[in-house]
Length: 59
Image 1 (cartoon, rainbow, N blue to C red):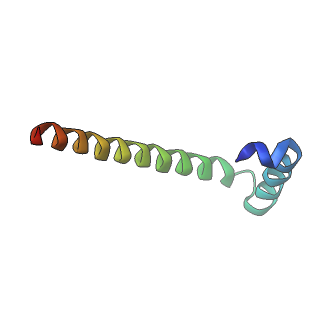
Image 2: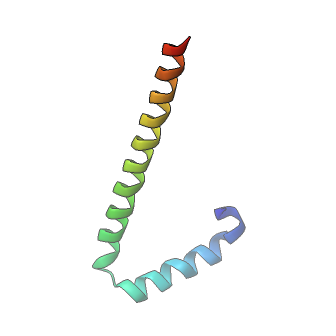
Image 3: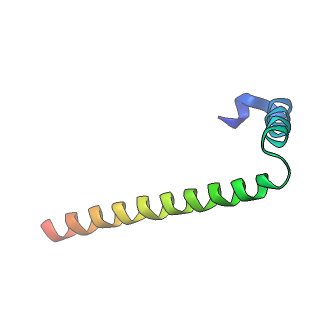
């Protein structure tokens, strides 16, 4: 997905984000995004682990 954007497009997106949100808000937004992705990853891992356990118990 990011490979189709390219480096110039990514730089443009970052500059626009900097102008819109400001330099003080960007680290907070990045931290919140990272925490959200981490929670999503953990939840997805829990779901797959539960499915594996259910399949093992049925066998």
